[in-house]
Image 1 (tube, rainbow, N blue to C red):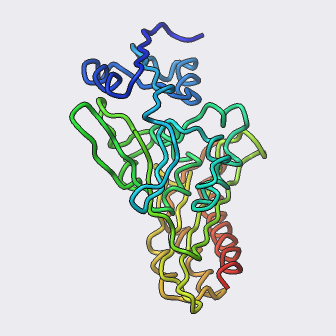
Image 2: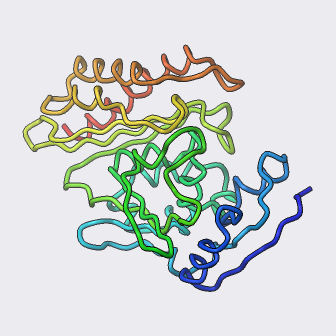
Length: 288
């Protein structure tokens, strides 16, 4: 059973920001509610006031602007699967969306909500990190952009202030020839929290070497993380088996996993190396 709460239903983003400004920190935004409602039922979270932002038009839409791809914070995971711009410019994100929970959850869960919840296992975290995404946080006082890597602070903690909303996510349109891939390991095929996940994105120079490389991991640290040393080992290199193996090893070293009911820390660290090596091997075939 849900605890008692008051419900605010603003019709516009300015009205929502006004309500948030007056009521913070006692007002909790609600979009899809796929994380918040279960938390309320379990007693983990008992907000005094909920503010429904799921219907705000200003938080919807997927479009290109000034060389960036922009996703509204209220866009659902299901909408990512049907968006031509995502298929064209962010297939790594589409891959993650395709195995996100189950169809019922995908129809409700929003991109902004998945990020703002800040679970280490958030499926949208690694693909958006390798896309070099940033989030736009808005309040009554104005807006600011924060690199996604800096947005996450700790388990379920972000830099978002009580009076701010996550309005959009954006990233530069990847260079032609860029290739990305995402994989998630769960205890079952659908509806499972990640044991771990990994995403990679590489940009070749046309001569067999990499101009850019990004590797991101989920559920192996207090937040989704970038494996910077592994990325450095790839830049300027050809994707040979030896280079790939070294990068995969460095990705595993970057983790600080825990033991829990889904897997041990040692298992997670070992599988990160295997998963990253497989992902890099897969994208190497496309690059070459």
